[in-house]
Structure formats: structure tokens, C-alpha cells
Image (cartoon, rainbow over all chains, first blue to last red; front, side):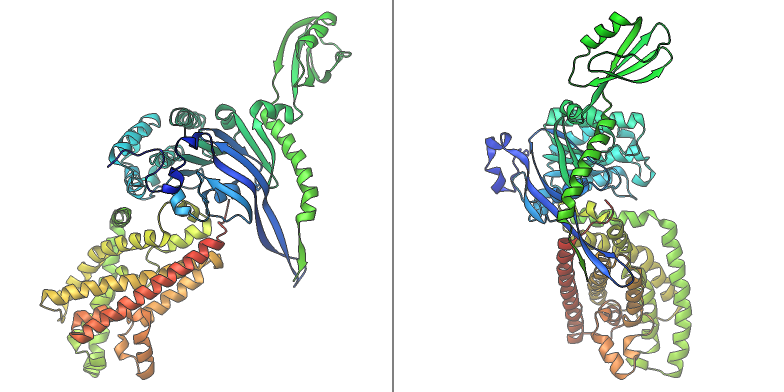
Length: 357
Length: 265
């Protein structure tokens, strides 16, 4: 068997792109919408048909080799987006391309080139040893022997799977099963890897192992990764770019640092004084938000430098110690959700169609 | 070929549960004895009922017991798992694979059927043959035709159960439909009573329904009621139902995946 080329042999259409592929975005989403029609009880016999806009016109591009965090509260439209990107849901509007393929029209062809991992579902064969599932993956994705052996060896080593290969999947712990699932998704060398909450329910060590592995896969293989999670540590440790979705709209798309400013984030200067004093006043650009004994917390805009503040405090107060705390990403995102929610609600009134049947 | 791997994996899956297989063999054998005793009494009163002599009728009983698990005469034969996957949304995982859903489940079902033919078919038939005078064929060709007929029967049975399972895409809970389909199969496959024994019009209609292809035809091949041209017509009858129902399954499948709303996140 010939060694597997980056552009698959079995799809001539997209393969032609060749060298330009790196310049072209691997994932293209243009104004994509997904509208579900839901019937709701309204009184005894009346049923109201309502349109629920799960995804409401989102656009983004992901270049090859990027690792993007995709976050949002429950029901924001994350999973719906991923289902459209993998072709199992057909978008109601807009244009969508993954590796040049329209997912909904050529789901099976696309499936050979992508990997999907769900934290809450498994692709492994419940009653059989882990290696049986891998053997099946090898045949289903027609992975050349040499590639299969190399990839399996790598996964086994990096994810500590050696002692688990002969164990039936139903006997694996959640963390073990998750590692097994990630390996299964990566055996065919996918171009894109979709991860839906890959660290859900895992302990600290398992999380660290999974993150380390994903980082390596992305860095060494150049695998493009779209990561959906509620664990923001995943994002902080793995992704330079974050997309935040809420009420079906992208409310933020950019770097992690930018998220801090976008969230209207404030940094915190914590000062320790010699003794208990009334709240610090008269420091320009800062306000005292908390006092506990000799310790005081001063909030100031994330964009502002801390140096003049420290100088101002030190000049007028008996300063013993200090520290600056970066804004907590979780609270930033909570703020974003709250802000985005308001925006989407006003837009939603126009988009919602109520009709008595 | 991946489907061979799926079939082999499914075979091994079912082989894992040895105690279940032993319990199944025991149950099939006990029921074989009970039904055989009833048939002996019946054929003693009405010899040549439905065109079978007593040995043929007894062979029919043990064939039904031997194929009970293989052709999933009374249940979903593992397709309740597909139903559950549709209900829970795990079906999404199946759809992410570069594999056709129907071919995947068909392969798995054939693997299951093969294991159950060996595990739950051979033993009861052997016990039946030792305990009763059965009309088993002597020539290998009839046995080969029987096995081919069993394979076609399993295909028809799968196609029917697959349709029932796919209904879960629309029904949310397919338990009721499974129950009805299980009863229909038990009655119209000839498992309760050979279809040739059914009175007049009912018998004629039942013989044309797809369930007849699941058990009645293979059993008739084995007991020697069908031979020559009739045998060929029987196999064609089975094949026609298999093709028609599998094609219908594909149609329903494409409708289901087009409208799919994968439940639960």
C-alpha cells in the first residue's frame, strides 16, 4: 500500500488544491443558520409552532493547524454547529465547507478525513477489548498498515494505553475510556478533530494527560482542532483562539487576551498594609472593592498599567506586600454570556414566529 | 473489509456471554420437548395435517427452536440496541463513521446470527434428533439449501427489525412497535404452528407475507416439503422479500438521516 498522502487519494476534487491548501481555511462557515421547528402547548388544545434558532447566522474560518476553543453556555448552539460541520445536521441556511467538502451532501466522504470525540458518548465496542475497536477503525478507514502501526504505537505511548488494550471497554474507567476514544479518533490521521467536552468528568491527572496529548497532536501533526468545553482551563492551556457562542450567535472570536478586554475585564490589585485602615481612596482609575483586615482589593481596568497605581498607594499608605491578579476567565465569560444574552434576546423577538394551529 | 470485521466483532461479542447461551439452549430444548409432545398428540389425531407426517412435524418443531435465536423469531435480536441508540442520541456516533448505517447493522446482525446458529441452534436440534424420530435429510445438498434458506431468512428478519428500529427516529419510543412486530413474527413465521396448518384463506395470505420467509420456508426446505422447482421458488420468494425490505430500509434510512434531530446534545 502506498503511504498516505496529506490529500487523500480517494478524493480527487479537494486533492487538486495541493499546495495552496495551507493558505486556504480548512473550515469555512458563512452565515450558517439552523432553525428547528418546535410545537409547544399553549392552552388546552392550542398548539403553537415556534421556530427556535439554534444557530443564528454565524461565520468563521479556521485555518489548517489551528486549535480553536468553542465555548458557550448550555443550549447556545455548540453541538448543533458541530453536527452541521460533520454533516449529520443539514443547515437551514448559509454556506459550510470542511476541507472543501459540503458536509451534509458528502457526509461519508468527509467522515474519512475527520475525527470526532464526544466526552459523553463512545465509539468503542462496549463488550470487546479496546484493541478490537482499533482493528475495526483500521479497516473502516482503510489505514495503511505502516501508518496504523506508527499511530497506534504513538497513542499507546502518549496515552498510557498499553495495559488497557486487552481489557473489554465496559471495564475501563471513564478516564481510560476517554483516552481510548481519543486514540480511536486519531488513528486514521484526521485533518480535523472535533472534541466535544473531552475532559468532562475526568480527574485532574487524566485531564492533564488528555490536554498534553492534544497539545502534542496539534503541534506535531498540525491537526486542526475544534474544542468544545465547559472547562475553561482546557481553553487556557490549549487554545490561542476562542470563539464564544451564545443564543446561536458568535459573541466573541479572537485571542484569549482579547477576551479579557472584551469582557470589560478588570484586574485586581491586592495590597497588604501594615495595619487595618479605612478603604483606600483617591487613587485615580481604581476603586476599592473589598477590605479584610489589613488587606484591600482594588479593581482597575485590564488595559491600564498597574505601576502608577502601586506608586500612588505606596506613596500614601504603609504598604507591606502586593500582588496583581489577572481577571478570572470564568467570570469574564459569564459577563460575556450575560451581555450576549441581552443582545440575542432583542434580536430573537423579531426572529421568533408564533402561530396558533 | 470493514463489514467482515463488524460481523466478526459481533460474533465475538455474543460469544462473550456464554452463560446466556447455555441458558438459551436449555430454554429452547425444554420448549422443544413441550411443543413436540403437543404435536405428537395433534398429529396422532390428525395424521398428515398440513401435509406433514409426524416426523416432519417434529422436525419443524425443532427447526423452529433451533432458529429461534438465529432468526430472532421472538425479539429484536440485538436491534433494540439500535433503537436505544436512536433514542439516546448515541446514533450520532454511528453517523460520524465512514460506514453505511444499514450495512453496519446488517453485518453485526449476521455475526450475531452465525454465533447463535452455532451456539443456540445446533445443540437443541441434536437433542431433538436424539429424543424424537426426526425427518432430517441425508444428502448434503439439502442441508446446503437449508443453510442458504436460513441465511435468506435472517436477511428478511433483519430487514423487518431494522425498519422497526428506524421508526424510533419518529416515535421517540419504539417499544410498542417492537412488541407488535415480535408478535407478528411469532405468529406469521410459523413458529406457533406451521403456516400450512392455518385454515384456508388465512394460510394462503400468511404464506405470502415476509414472515413466512423467516421460518416457514427454511423449515420446509429441511423437512423436504420443498424440492426441485418448489425449492427454487421458495428461495426466490425469500430473496425477493429480502431485496424489497432492505431497499425499503434504505429509503427510510435516508429519510431518517435527512430529518434527523439527534436527541440529547
